[in-house]
Image (cartoon, rainbow, N blue to C red; front, side, top):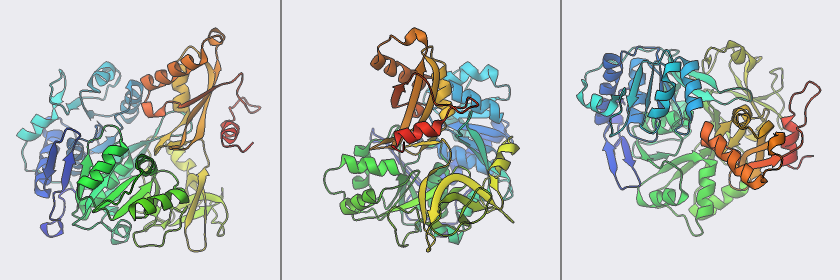
Length: 520
């Protein structure tokens, strides 16, 4: 399928990958070149690194062309691909490498020293591949190995339920869970029913602005455009800049754009004039709810509508507003085949229209193709999210008589900041390492740009009660940035004398969250 990137007749007239950066560099790979390079990459993995089908490979790369070679190389060989954001810190890397029993890692010289510092604690880690113009002791140079590798490679005969990728997804307690996906996830993108969602054409230039550690990167930055034979446009952009995004949409013949809601919101706030992009035809967004007034402002400035999508690391895109379908501002659309999305109660019963409940995906008698296989090495958690005949997403919504789903919020403590799902325990654990913090509770807080941000309620240790509060906030924020992924740091901090708790001593995050949203 995508591993040999379709037959000539289904390829578009443009390149498969069109990559640019801020320095003005451009790279274009045809489908033939991409096939050749991915075969060479597959041979590097198996012949030089000794990796085998089923081995886990951590991939922590920015938007560099090698990310796509590694992803396809893994698919060709049956190696399980585990993407991660470049914002991971030593503690995050250590956890992921240990819990996944990773046999190898691919990253850049930015993170190579961090990996070296923890490698002795990761007994399964045997292969370290570097994507860089610089050499690094103890690391294999992926770029040079690809150049010298053989272009002859026979793709494994993978089965639909063979494991393909693991995505780390945040939970309300402890570290992220490992959501394992099969090759069926890739196969699903070729289904006619699934292709109705974005309706990508071979002539399209498709720009997806996903973080490379998200499941959206695999879906939107690879499977969707390439199974249609379209061109994937990528800007290296280490950190999102709305000014650069606007420049790209005017400069390049981009026809489709897929990005988190925050991206479109920041573009709107950056631009004071018309945003009538010359070639842009279709825009899709997800990751958080879109306000009706934002939809209207985007339509007014661009002449286009924003089509919403909804999904999780466990599901991929499971519902949305299909291209050409009526848009109801504020709704995230309808279920997309092969998914049957219903609103359910806590026992897995389907609820009547316009009744608040949990968003459920039917998984019995058979799971939809491409639905996650379960949480790796955590059958208890996998069983916990099953609710009767449904998978319980933990998100709350209603469904109207036409099948449109209206998102209300999460039924747990997950914080959704600019599309990043952040577990409160991850931030609380980071804060607890600072001597000023006796206790902390982390919740979401409203924000005019990001919709919600991380807020920390902190009880100080006696030694720090007299410290300057403004300076201490900066110090704590910097501390969190230094020990975990920077996007998790609390943008808001409030010092309190005590935290609200249940009779059993459990922190009542829901009470703090309601306070933030003026519900108390």
